[in-house]
Length: 180
Image 1: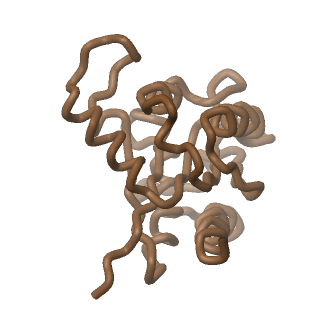
Image 2: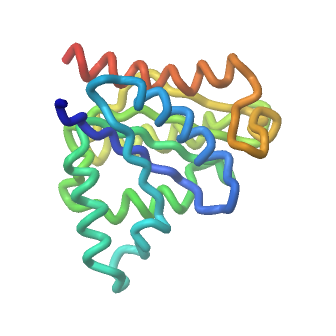
């Protein structure tokens, strides 16, 4: 059996039962359907990442960087907080090396928000940051407005259109990887 290539999925929230992770799990599920790719969900808590310059667990930091470096593609999922991406996701990005392990990799974005227009502003900021660190930011993205209306307590998306939107970024990334 051939080993699958990993796609790193950054989750920009650490809140218990957060919608960002619920959205990321749908994207991961779509990636998992592929014969060639495996999702690797990465969270701030898993690696105990700290603000850059602070002492943290160097072994976990290197493991985090290694997972991103070994990935063939990246998905970044963020909630929208105060018109921008979450500080949690920013800390994850700031803990990458220079040049970043994202450099040269295709990146797709997804965001969730409580408001009617979705995560438009956070995705705009995240797109700029990812391009600055060298990611090949693909044009397809998913934004989920009024996110609390679309997930149940078991992490299931209750709206077929929203679920298709989230799955579409995984499909787009896989299509890019297979045709580059």
